[in-house]
Each structure stands twice: as structure tokens, then as C-alpha cells.
Length: 482
Image (cartoon, rainbow, N blue to C red; front, side):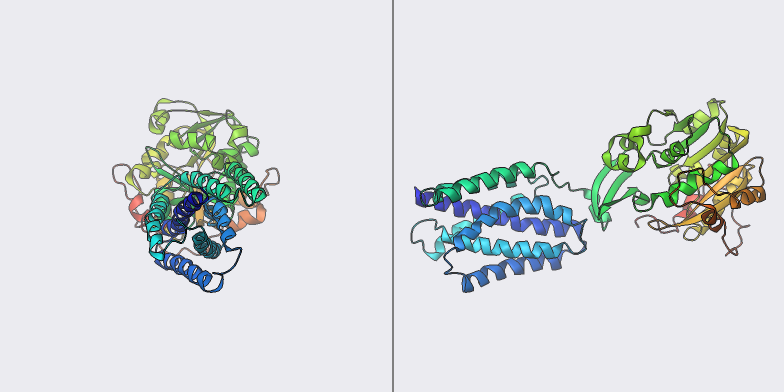
């Protein structure tokens, strides 16, 4: 019976070896565009560990006890190494050490013969078990089998050592129970098809009816993308949303009604709530994304929406229909809409749309929109300003260097304040009454400065629904995957 369990240990053990060896190769293939170097390194290290153990540790009395590492390695790889890819700069070196340990443990399995005095060729029957474990791991997306294999493996170890070392057997069983329970407190790794588009680890991905939403992670910070375009990052979100929210409040200090078009991720509305504003209506462009931002922990962590939702009225209607049919007037209208990378999104930067926005503003009111990068998509930026002016707005714009986005701009349109008046009032604004992390008078003065114009903009036409041209210029920038 003892020999039976020894054979059981070596067979299940080599299943685990194959299962473990496949996992770093899967990670390399998942995270790197050219994983062949890393995969070759893993294979070389594994074979080297086998040969070095055979040469220098073959006669070591306690060598067979190194197989106990196979209890820890499957769980460590699944729960630890996936996390390491977004936490340290060179996670592959940790995997190199684990692969080396795996090679030693694999050789130690030979101390549990399949049959007494087995000849060397007998061990070729282990190859199918090794390949089965390898393929199960490499082709799996859940990796739930690892815990079952560990449970089978430790059962064989306990049975084979029970007569000689009951304390070791009992401790092994207890250790596995603790490991399996502890492992369940960690989220299993999730693999996403969109990972090939990003260098950082994708931790969330969902496709709505209008766009694809991805969230990546690196060292505890997150980047939020829609259709491959970075919308904001936890590193510096305030560098984008504070200029979006607060400057226009200095031009319209008393507000009764506010409209936010878009703003599904909740970041802009959160800034408005922090400023003490209420009576906010929101017309989302993508209602699925709005729901995600109100439910997914990754969004709630940064938009604070779990504390503020319900303070604004969400209007489930097409924004064009709403603006045409509704006669409600607003003191402020924020256009937090996606970049105009296609015809559908181009419509939110057209003269027809700005005409509707102007008709819904009170006489003292103003609107503000993000207007892209004034340097990487200069033509698109100029067209936005020219189109706003064609709708009767007096326009002033400002820009900021957002670390994770690059240079970005916003444009304020007013029907009663001239561009000069707006610029002068913004220059004098101190923002002391708002809970800003970065924005102050000095920052505002810097954002209003563009230097000398780099080109003449007179030849640019106005962007309209019938003659859309903004998205063509915008795609000359570098904000999406090619």
C-alpha cells in the first residue's frame, strides 16, 4: 500500500509540475507582445534546476521533502504572481526563482518510485501526466483545478509518510487546509482579451452598446480608458477635473440649475458636489457606463459616487431630443463627452449642438467643454473654438499639463461676457472657497497662457452635422490605438 501511495504522489506531483510550469508561460504570453525570450528563459531555468539537482543534490537525504514546495507553488503562482505584474518593475525575476524551485521539487519526486526498483524508462509514463497538467493550466481561464490537485497531492503525501512521520503528515494536512482557506480570500486572476492593447495589467473590461471600457493597474494606481483612449488616471485625475469644474464657477457665481451632458464616470459631478452645488441634471450619453460607475468598486473608489448618487437627477433621454423638447433653462452646462474620434461622437462638437446648448442657457449662463489637446490635435482644438464662436458664444480657453494625458484644454462659452472679461476675471480668481488639490490663482494664470499662436486658423471651417470634419483632424493626433 505504501508503494501505491508513492506512485500516486509522483503521478499527481508531475501533473502539478506541468500545471505550474505552464502558468509563467501563460503570464508572459498574456502580458508581453514578444514573450518568447521569457518563455525560453523559464524552460532553460527549469531544465537547469533538474540537472543541477541531479548532479549536486542527488544523494541528499532530505531531498524528497522538497516536494512539499509543490503544495505552495500552484497557489503562489495563481494568487501572487498575477498581482506582481502590476506591483513591481521586474516580476519575471520572482518567477525565475519559483521556476528554479519547481525544477528542484520535480527532481525530488523521483524519490517516490512508481514501483520498487523501477528502471529509468519507467518514468516516461509520467510525460502524459506532465503534459496534461501543462495543457490544463495553459488553456484555462479560471485555474480552479490547482486547489483540487494540491488536495490530491497532499493526501498522497500524508498516506505515504503516515507510518513513519505522523507529525509531519498532520502538519502537512493542516498547512494545506490553511492555505486553501487563505487562498479563497484573494480574488482569482481575471484574463481579458483587451490586454494585448495595454502595457499595464487590465483589471476590468466591459463593452457597452456604445464603447469599450477598460481599467488598467500599475503599482496600486489605475488608468481608465474608453475605446483605448485614456480618460483619467488615479495618479492625477484632479489635474483634469479641477480645471473642468471650478474656473467656470467663478464666471457664474450664483447657480440655480446645472446640466451635465455625459460625465458618466462620475468624476466631474463629484467635483461639483465637493463645491457644494446641487440641482444638477445629468443626461448620460452611455447609460451602461453610468451604471458601471455607480456599482463597480474601481470607479466608486475615485468618483465618490456611493456617497453622492441621488443628489442629481439622471435624465434617460437622447440629449438632442431633450434639448429640443425641454424648455428648462440652466445657468451652467458642462459637456463632459468623449473625444470626437468618429462621426457619432463628432456630433457633440457641432454648431447644431452648440446652438441647442445656447438656447438652454440663462442670460447669465455659460457652458464649458473639454476641447482636446491644443498641441497634439491642434487643428481639432481650433475647430472646436471656431464652431463655438459660430454659435454665438464668446469663447475663452485654457490648458493644463496632465501627467498621464499630456497637454489638455477646455473652452468656456458665454453669451453675455466677452472673451476679454472672462479672461480677466479668471486671472484674478483665487479659488480659496473650493476644496482643490492643485488649482489656485497662479495655476489659473498659467493655464490661460498659450504664447504666440503656432498657425493661422482662418482656413478652418465650422464643424456641422451635415459637414462633419472635426473627427478627421482629431485622428491626426495620437490618442487612440492605430
